[in-house]
Image 1 (cartoon, rainbow, N blue to C red):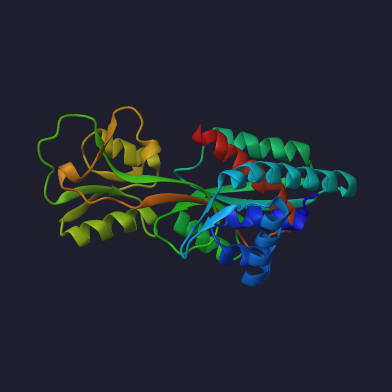
Image 2 (tube, rainbow, N blue to C red; image 1 turned 180 degrees about the horizontal axis):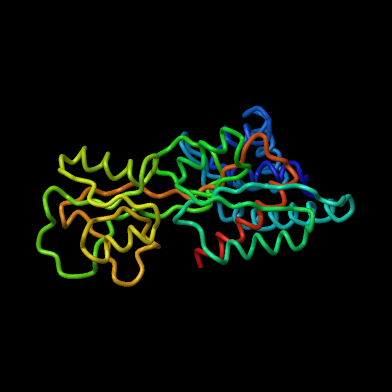
Length: 284
């Protein structure tokens, strides 16, 4: 029989992308986390992770056990919730980045509220930097948003290339200085774009300051300005410019789920799977 504590450590190491972050999340020492993984591998009789000094990757056996581990832990949580359930009376405030919000996420959150009538969910839409600052001030319990090349903690949901979006039409030469459509500060896409252009010695100007993804798309679709955005958001009428146009490569956009230290653990346990499931279906 598998020990649920060891399975939880295994899943947390993978979700937090490292032993040190998993240790922080589980309130354990890093050596204790490593010990849990060794005990689990001893039980299985096979390695579960390929470890290097900088990263770790699931082995094929690790992939198989991960699927079972998530199911076992979910059933454990459900059984505990059903047998110890008390009426939930709480409000949770969730910050969602502008490029993440969509109706399906709100429906998923609303379905969760319907199953727990005593819970209220308030959603605030803004850029990630602003939302994370509000969470640090105690004004939000959870934040869903993207970061680029950051040391911020948080559960990695997925990552994808950040690209230079432009109208899908023949292009002979980009204007100089390069016109940009950007979100206001503090925005990870803005910071990444300006940093990479400066490093490449490419002159730029902010031709359009946008408060929504719709504004970025309009600027790029019209050929008014180049806009940094995640690859999946290009959509019809837009294309990604690259090195062949003289532009530097941008870092990946990392979509993460952040939770506040002051947040009720019961609410986090309840809502995190809803958000993760939404992200899984969003990527399909």
